[in-house]
Image (cartoon, rainbow, N blue to C red; front, side, top):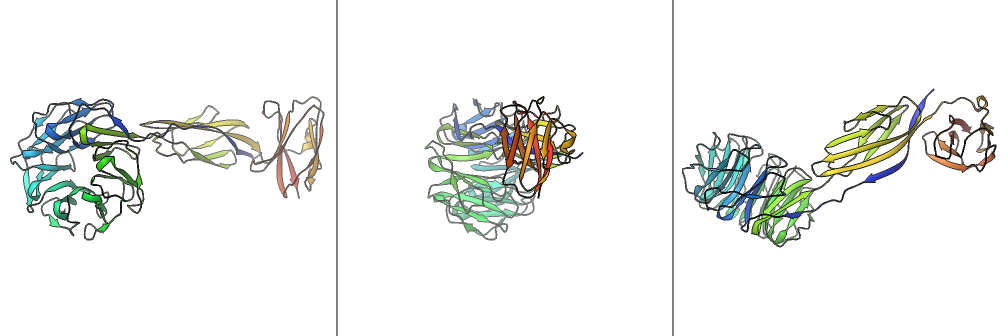
Amino acid sequence: MKKTLTFLFIICSVNLAMAQWVEQGTPAETTLRGIHFQNPDTGITVGSNGEVLQTLDGGLNWNKIDAGTTNTFGDAHMTNDSTGYAVGNAGTIIKTTDGGQSWTILNSGFSTILRGVHFINESVGYVCGQSQRIWQTVDAGANWTLQDDLGAYWLREIDFPTANIGYCVGDGGNIHKTTDGGVNWLAATSGPFVEQWDVKFPHPDTGYVCGTAGILIKTTDGGNNWIALNPGTSLNLYGLHFFDTKKGYITGAEGLILYTEDGGLTFTTEPSNVIMACVDIFMYTEYMGYISGQSGLVMKKCLPPTVGYTANVNELEISFTDTSTFGENHYWDFGDGNLSYDQNPQHTYTTTGTYDVQLIVENLCGTDTLTQTFIIQSSQLPEQDDHDDIIIYPNLNSGSFFISTGMQTDIGTICITDISGRQIISYELKQQGSNIEINGNFMPGIYLVHPMNKDGLRTLESRKIIVQ
C-alpha cells in the first residue's frame, strides 16, 4: 500500500520583532573612532584622548580602561579572542592579550600620527598614518619596519583582502596597492581629490572607498579603474563594512547609516535616531553589528531570525527545505518522536496519521518558530465494498456519487481531497446513518474520501474514488 504525506495548513508562526540600531550606554564622551569584535561577547572601541572601552557581554556594558596614554587613538583591531591592537597619535601602538582588560604600550620606534591598523594573522600586521607612511610587523608588534614613505598626505585606513594584496587610502585621492605583502606599494588610479576615510575589499579585485562630501567609489578590477557611486547624500562618509561584493554598510555624519545589497546601485537608509557622526562600523555577522562615533556613541543592531520552510513529499518520505532568514541553528520536531538538527532534513514516517512538524531557528539575537501540520494518507486503498461502515457508489463516476455511513460509526465530517491532499469539499454529518449525494465540479482524476470524527481525527481508512 502506498502512502503519501501531504501538506494541510499552517498552525502558527511566531516572529520576534526585527530590531533596528539601538544606542548602547557608554562612559565615554569623546569621539570613538574605531570598534572591533573578535567574538559575539568581547569587543573594544577606542577614540580621542586615550579613550579605550571594553565589553565582555556583547555591548550591554562597556568598561573604561586605562591604556596608559592620553594620545588620541584612530583605529583598533582584534586578532583573536584575547589579542588586539590600537594605534594613535605620536606613533602610539598599544596591545592587549586579555581581551582588552589591560594594555601595554609597544615601542613603535617612531612618532608619526597613526590612523589605520590591520592584521592578516596573529603575527603579521600593518599600520598607516601621517606622511603616507606604512609600517609592518611580522612578530605580533614586537618590531615595526617602515615599508614605504609615499609622500606628504595622510593615509587613514588600510585593508588586506588576502595575505599579499592590500590597499591603503588617504587624503588627496591617494589610493595605494601592494601585491607582495607590502614589500612594494604602488599608486593605484587616484580617487577624488578629497579626504578618504575608509577602504574595504571583500574580494581582491572588488573594493569600496568612502570620503568627504558623500564621496563613494568602487573598483572591480583591483584598483585600476574606479567608478563613482551615488549614495544620495553629500554628508561625509566615514565607515565601511562589506560582507561580500554586493552587500554592505556605509556610515557617516549626522547619524547616517546606509545599506546596499546590489553593490552600490541602490541604497537604503537605516534609522539611527541620533545626530552624532557614525565614524566606524563593524559587522560581526550579517544580522549583528556595532557602530562607534561622536560623543561616546556606540550602537548595536541585532536581528533575530525569521523562520520558514517548504516540504516536498514522496510516498512516506518528506524532504524539508529551510527558507529562514538569519537562522544559524535548526531544531526540527517531526511530531512522531523523532528530531533533527540538520538545516534541510529528510524524514520517513512509518504509520498513517496527522503530524505537527515544528522548526525552531536560532541565532545570537533570538529564535523564531514555525509549526505546520501534515497528514499521511493512502494513495492505493482497498475498494469500498470491503467496508460496511462507509459505502461510496458508484466508484467510477463523472463527478456525481453517493456516500452512505453506517449507524455504528463515529464519523462527524467527510473530507474529500485530490491525490495531492488539496481539500476539494467537506460535509458535516448531522447524524449517523447518513446518505449524502455529491454533485461536485470535479476534474477527471483520483480523489480521496477521508472520514473524520468530531475532533478532526481520522476514524476509518480513506477511500479512493475515480472521476472520469
